[in-house]
Length: 231
Image 1 (cartoon, rainbow, N blue to C red):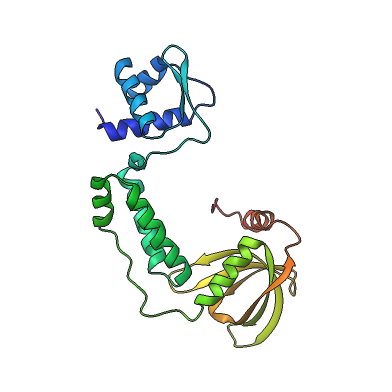
Image 2: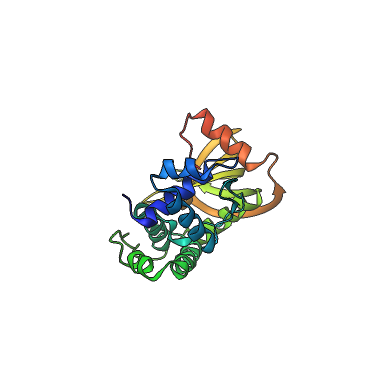
C-alpha cells in the first residue's frame, strides 16, 4: 500500500477529477482503502486547508477555490520545481532570478520540515553563468511588453551585422542554453520572425497596445508551425 502522503495525494486527484459529488464508497474503492480510512483521510485534508464539501452519506466534492496542502508535492514534482527554479536563479535574467529565489523561499517556508530538508538537498544542479549578461535589461523590458501586451521598437543587427529598425508585436520569449530569442510579428516583414536578444542594439517599449490579444497571436504562430502545447 502507498504511504499516507501518496494516498492523500491520490485522494486529492480523485476529487479534482470530479465536477459533482462522489460517494465515500466510490472514493474508498478507487484509492484502495476502507471507508473508515477514507473518512479519516478526508478529515486530515480538511484540517490542512483543502476545501472539501460534503459528509458521509451525501458524497464529497472539492470546491474550485481549493487550497492544495504543501505536502501534496510528490518527490518527482518537488524535483521538477527545484530544478526549474535553479535554472532561473542561475540564468541570464537577473529580475527573474530574484523572483525565483523569492518563490523558492516561499515554497520552502510552507513545507513540513522533513520535506523542506529534502528540497534543499535535491541533487539536481545548474551550472551558473560566468557573469552578468549584457541583454539582462532587454529581457526585463520584453517581459514587461509581453505582460502588458504592448508593441516594441527594435534596433536589430542580423547575422551579417546589418542594422535595421522595426516595430514588432511580442509573442513569446524563448530561453535557450546559450542565447534567448524573441518571437514576434514583424510589421516590417509582415510575418512572424525570431530575433536573438544579443542582436538587439536598442529596445524601446511603446505606448501602443497590440492590435490583438497576445494569446491569439501566440496560438496563431504555434499552430502555423504545428508545435506541441508550450503552455
